[in-house]
Amino acid sequence: MRTKLRTVEKTGELIGYSELAIRNNHSVLEFYRTSLAALSGVAAGTIGLTSWKGFLFYFICAFFLSLYIVVKHCSGNKLTFLNKSSVITSGLTSGWITYILFWTFLYGMVHVY
Image (cartoon, rainbow, N blue to C red; front, side, top):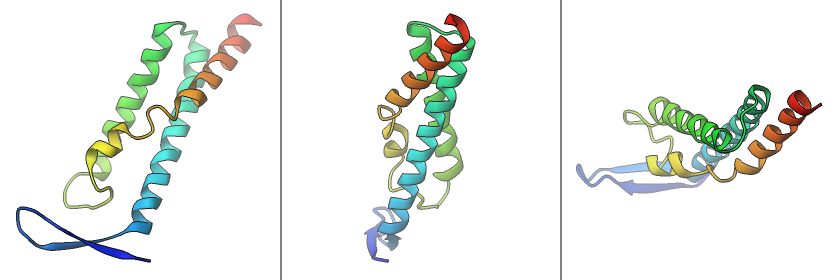
C-alpha cells in the first residue's frame, strides 16, 4: 500500500493518505451510483414517468445521493475523499445508460403490456 503526503494549507502539517484506500472509496461510490440508477429507473418505470419528468427524477435522486454521501462521509476531519466536488460530480453521467435501461424496461412491462 503506497502512502503519499499532502500539506494542509492553513496549518502547514503533513497528512498521509493511501492511494489504494482512495481508489477503493471511488469504486464504492461508483457502485452506489450504479445501484441508485437501477433502483430509480425501476421506480420511474413503475410509477409511469415519461419525458422530462423521468430525467428530472434521475437528477433529483442523484442529487440526494450526493448530498447524503457528502454529509455522511466528507464531514469533519475524515479523509475519505480528496475533495467534495469529485464526490458530487463523478458518476452522474455514467449512470445514465443504466437508468434509461431500467426505466424503459419497467415502463414497458408495467404500462404497455
